Amino acid sequence: VQLQASGGGLVQPGGSLRLSCAASGSFFRVNTMGWYRQTPGTQRELVADITTGGTPNYADSVKGRFTISRDNAKNTVYLQMNSLKPEDTAVYYCKGSGTYTDDHRLYVSWGQGTLVTVSS
Image (cartoon, rainbow, N blue to C red; front, side, top):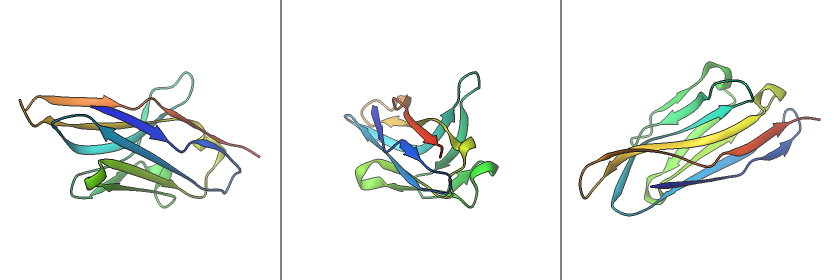
């Protein structure tokens, strides 16, 4: 299963960006999808994730500012980021986990990362 992320860029503090990540492949089912972020010298951290049923989970640092959503028909997850702060600057990675429907193997896949820079 391959994940393709898009939507990063440069934005001023207080601005908004929307990230998208689409999963593709054959004979698979995606369960939890999520977004993580990483800055140089730090560990990758969870930003938000969402179950197939639409239950979201957020890091405390983004609650009230970021909204995660998904379109199950398109195997796509979105991250709407509002009121962005300089400390949100990072490479954002999407993650998907689930099973292959032909042999029921589990998988975990990561997207390639998209850079979000919040700066004036």
